[in-house]
Image (tube, rainbow, N blue to C red; front, side, top):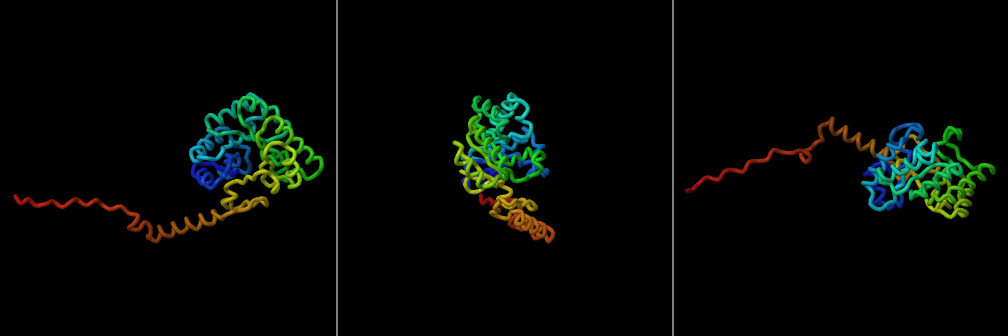
Length: 258
């Protein structure tokens, strides 16, 4: 699974063979430039889901449910999830939380909405957690995360994101729950893995989390390409004749011989 936010990236990731495209509330950081994900709205997710749906042909599209779009009442959660599917053209939704959101997951699943759950480090609770910190390192916290995983699976979630937890805990959860797990900073024993596409491609110049493998450095390559464009424009080597349109020539008149 890889995050996607527009049609062009969706097409790249889809053609590369990604099984799932997550329209994540991480767009608040990598697209909107915020320090966290909390200001992302349902309208934002719907807009970006529609764009991703236009670019993807094969991948399953998951729309993130933003902060306070599902925590207030099950009815509002159902309505917002329905918008992400009906208007955003996503195939399922993802929401953060464990046992506390299990009844909401059950309500959505009963209404025919597939739900991916997310436990461990949950970015929408960043302030309650004291920052983006690894979770589940002590016995009590690990037991809580394990209980959360079982609760969301029993509520009907079809898959479970495990974020920012020790690899040993992720392996135990993967062995115990009956649904696939997708890890991010959770070790190799999960059933799948997810990365933010901007991290994977090296487009985040100043953010280099430990759990990310950068498969390219497109930020640096992009800077170099645009610098070359600027130099070419200033030196008048661009546009060249091959990039310039000419005036159409009129056909020469043929003299009459009659």
